[in-house]
Amino acid sequence: MLHPLIWIPSRWHTRAFIVLCALALSMLVIMRWVHQPLISDAVPGGIIDFELAASLDASLAIQVAWGEKGRMYAALGLGLDYLYLLLYALALSLACSRFAYWGEEQGRLSVAMSWVPIAAALLDALENYALARLLFGEVREGWVIVARDCALLKFALLAVVALYLLYAAAQMIKVRWRVFAG
Image (cartoon, rainbow, N blue to C red; front, side):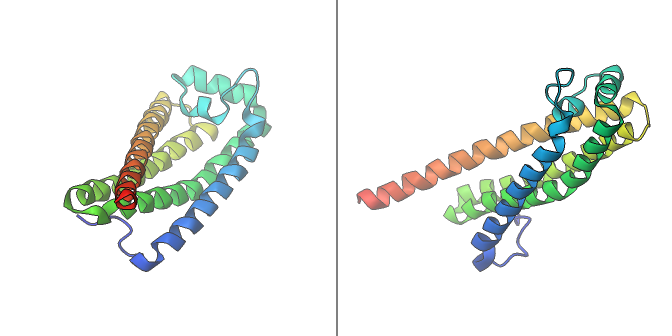
């Protein structure tokens, strides 16, 4: 199995990773600024509360608390999130694939893990679509369920990626320590 970023020449991986991380972090800062007006006493989690709304009533209550201006900020944030999900998926996938050069066993795991951020991004895109449908007046319980389930799966997959990257980094440090210690 090949990793999803095989089209990027290996000599460019480090540069691509740095650029993707810088762009993803920049988008994160911008989105945080855009989402700031969505945080209030009524909706302390802001957009995350909307993503994880447990029912149509909860989703509608969040939108009422935001008002028209807040709903516009939420819509802008969802639009920006499509660019962000592309950037974080590519950056994390590239980070996972970098550990594929350790050998057969680690390589297979690394390649498999490099697909997980892509799956998380696809779930994020579907979640955004469902949330946009809700924001623009398609009041259906199904969209709430799709958004919530996609968000939960996305967060779970990204947590798995984070744990893998911590594991891989620890393994890399262990190998380098052995070489250093002789």
